[in-house]
Image 1 (cartoon, one colour):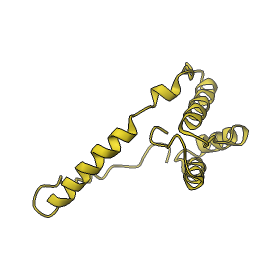
Image 2 (cartoon, helix red, strand yellow):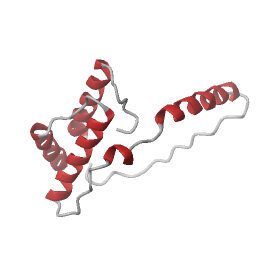
Image 3 (spheres, helix red, strand yellow):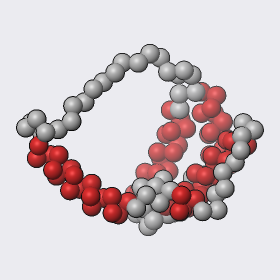
Image 4 (cartoon, helix red, strand yellow):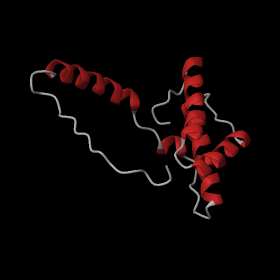
Length: 123
């Protein structure tokens, strides 16, 4: 949620809403996915802003924690907790991407290593 815009376009709101519902649909643990879909039915995703989405995410996380008898998180300042300084990161990231792109094929890029793992628990 930290990279979600504070003033999202309608398309960005739709994308996050869809992403959350797809996450619930494709979650590896079928039982957990079912529980999450029940939570989504009761508490639909709030996608009007970054702060609304972060507060919703925190609330939903606490719903899960409560059902598991785990400690809940104080959502009072969740917007501050998830503030990543994305605007600054975007400018720095664009510069790094441009530098990385110019070094591709020149031995300057990082190698990608894929590791095959066994079956994921619950999947």
